[in-house]
Image (cartoon, rainbow, N blue to C red; front, side, top):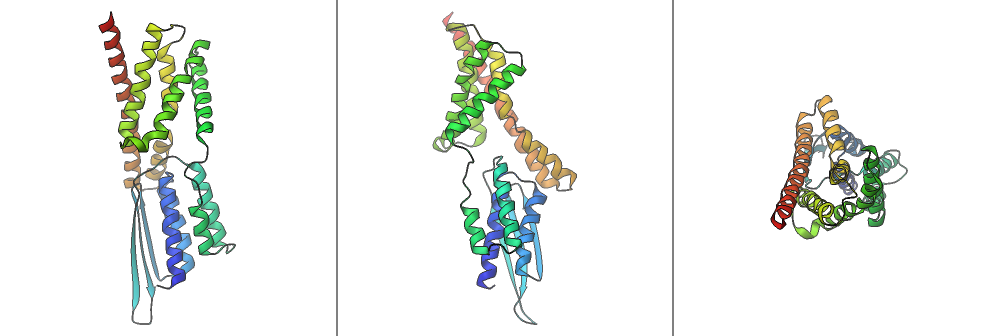
Length: 262
């Protein structure tokens, strides 16, 4: 394989990896990788994408009797909903296909895509506003809106510190929701009862449910990619289970503390 073709292969595999990490649909990943690799004009090309990895197999002729076969496997372990990454990868891909940039520049632009689109401050403000919006939707009172600052801080703390805990996303979700469902009833019982902890907990859980992953799983299933769809369904189910388990654990502990002290 020539040096230019190797760069194109690196570009295709990295673009596919970014799309899988951003929870793009399986058909979108395969289409993008094929579009990039077709620029190299290989004899045979096949791409398979799943929610946990990318498999690329291509064959290039050396002469009339020999050919060079390359198989590449890219493992993906961490996934999160990052729509801005999908948009940036698509933009770079079409710039490369239309020959507005070369493979080296396209790869450089992909590697320059940040991990997150917003700062921690922006994430906190948006989470706080979103929780307050759900509280208003649930007919909450002004006290509920004020107390929603506490779960917003807890969520941001766990999301920003997940790498430091050395735990997977399931355990992070359990500890995060257990913390807020443990603290809020205690505040309502011992500090102030000017808010409804049930409304605040329900509003806090709404942004955490994996609606996008479940929707993408349905889209993959409709297009016949059942393995990827099944993986997304299981991911969504485990996420919802972790949230429910954490809330149940926190409520049990808070009720135990209140009962013990009374």
